[in-house]
Image (cartoon, rainbow, N blue to C red; front, side, top):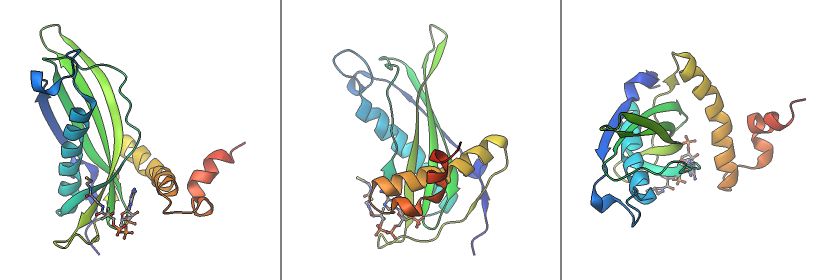
Length: 172
Ligand SMILES: CC(C)(COP(=O)(O)OP(=O)(O)OC[C@H]1O[C@@H](n2cnc3c(N)ncnc32)[C@H](O)[C@@H]1OP(=O)(O)O)[C@@H](O)C(=O)NCCC(=O)NCCS
């Protein structure tokens, strides 16, 4: 049995500047580039929790509500919300900052799932996550429903098995 870890152990902050090569023809950051940065930031977080090589298993709905402009500073914060057997859910938040204008806006949030693997790419056990703060506890509890939803959508779990997810729809 591996020693449980707190979410703060896996906290990662990553900062990037949007350069011309990162943008589309409107001078906004391309969605694919942002997803790439988010994947790296979230993967480092999962590595810190598991001390293992990790691979991305899935990314939950990322929406792009605010364009991020050329020259903006992009800050990403990631942490593990819950660990299962070999997989970990990572919550990542993104902000864009226009430093000269003194403006900072929240632009994206997403949940990534990483699987810890051995040298042969086979899934391997990870430590449990032990929540500490109110936010950790909320994310930890809701992670089970999100896991069930993504596994049902991926055809890896039957809807009947998704007990906590079903309970959401059965409330009066
Ligand atoms: C992720 C991967 C290791 C899973 O391997 P597998 O043979 O399906 O292994 P298992 O069925 O034992 O599942 C292992 C874990 O992955 C999780 N998993 C598999 N597919 C998943 C999905 N679509 N979404 C979320 N979790 C998933 C399982 O729930 C399980 O979690 P648990 O151990 O915590 O219960 C394998 O599919 C893989 O290597 N995928 C490619 C990863 C990659 O290259 N990513 C970069 C994309 S370019």
